[in-house]
Image (tube, rainbow, N blue to C red; front, top):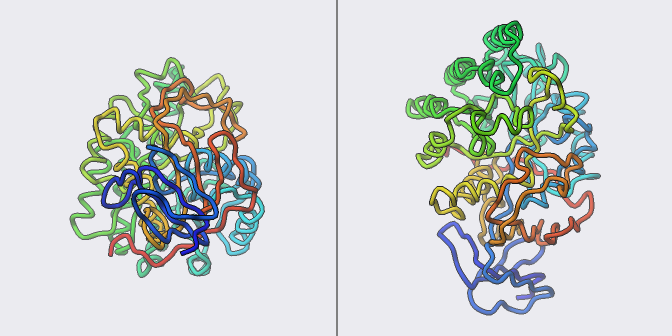
Length: 454
């Protein structure tokens, strides 16, 4: 067998770790797995005892919310530096959301021009838009749809009314496509923000209180019930409390298609502990809530979290430097910290960090978005998308990030692992120091046939 590449180290396989092992790669696919001395190949790389895992699939990114479609370049450059080989990008693009076939074509063209990593895409609908526009987007490969119950912008991030949410669920009911939601009740949030402003409260603690769990859970419950009524797949893209995941689980137990997602910053930060230091640098929506980290890890261990994502936002730091927390932009960069932060936190809790990292960051998102079995696992026949993790500790310094943002709430935090290499389709993309593949190396990834609920 003629191989293009062998990569040796400790393989984290679906059945468990395999030490002193190797992968054989040809034409961008894994074609052989073995132990001992790797066979001859055009190129060989021995990582020693480093961990070799599938390339991470980041199931929630916002690549173009600030820089337009060209923002795909810096976002995916940062992705491969973080061991992420596929991003799943949200549809709220600048200047217009991805809600039509023409806009999908424009974004696919931008991927082909700019992407260093593979890109899968969410679609959306706008207020009053016909559900007839949904099917062409599905036929052309979008992996999911997303809407919001809270309006951040009437043109780019609008609120979708309940009757249109139900109609959208009806249109998706016979498909495997999930409908995701930004889950906050607009009336509750706006009333609480107005009250906080009137009281002169404008710090990070006021942010969480102004968007209380009741606003998140009320929107979540209504959305799940609408999905259940249509027998469609209802997905909550970010839950911040254990109760939210348990609510989703009740619908699942009743036989409905329901899932909930968690973002890594909810597992690391607490406004009571970190708010004075970070301020608006840790502002996200829904908010990071005090005292939730342990409970959220328990939800992961109980199997109630569909997968963990970064919710990477491409906002520059200037967007955070406002006198009031309510005027600061929501969202944080996260592509180069998702993998080491999750692994480090899991290891710190005494968990099998390698196994749970592959499960939550690779296998589960691959299955959720219909990219399995080509992606998400080291197995014969899978795409040769790989990340190599060394046990070299690092102090995160966002000034060295590759996202053109160069700020992060993780600055100064210690991670127990470092992304040493990233391969995309069997080709080196990140060598531990530099991104070495070219823009356009990444591909537009269409949804395949795998169904999360089969």
